[in-house]
Length: 332
Image (tube, rainbow, N blue to C red; front, side, top):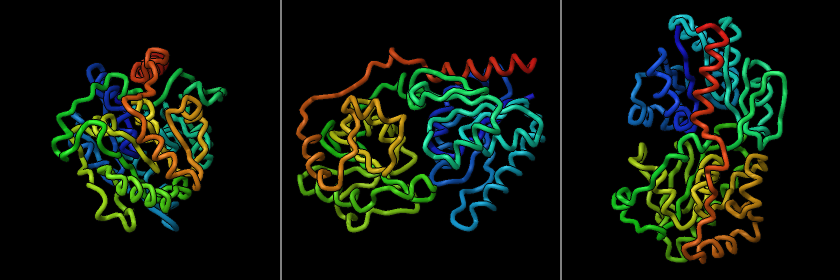
């Protein structure tokens, strides 16, 4: 019998990667990946296990069709691989597991995205959430910390990658701009991101931009260097930036947890971000204070608001222990 990991985003690959490596030493582990953005390309570069590409991200009127295709392809894969447990961060796997008559473990932290949260919670056999969300229920397991610490806890930055882009430590602005391909991203503040990039550039700061396929920074083509992905050391590039500006909530949390002054322009009010905002690690500016906040962050000298990770659980251990415990309860 096997454990099947279903990965839908690059963030899921980062989150599960170390746990997959650990569990594969003792169990048969299979990996299924949805074709979205640069995920398949990055997985080929970073994942040591072979994986199967199944389904693609669809938009608009085709979204329901994409959901059905994804669930059915997972059902077929789980049957062929004799899966005992399906592990993921979304409802596709939870529904597919119910259809197959097997169990699912889902890790989640997006309380506000109700279209994802409720089916993920209702169909999952085990639903694992950070305590910061303050949610409890019949099948909920809580841990103390952030999903991003699954890979940032042991992260050690290196300046070597800076030379690939001709950058100096704390001498540039890191930008992450996501495409509006999911409903939770439709409120992203794209026009303000473009203003922010142009303003930082006028201040003389080099801009390194990670731009998701399917979007662009209108009017900014001459003002930034584009990150080539897969990147040899993505998080070192985030770590050594003077300021991070992101429309994506994952990179905004990563930068905040790394101690980089962070401006979040995703347009979402997320409970998981509140402690970082209160600590001053993440800023959500009003439109009229955006440029002022950029100037304030860039004026910081040698100041990192870096949290002490030891106060939180080791998230990779949480993943491994939860999966191992669940397998034991199934007699595997």
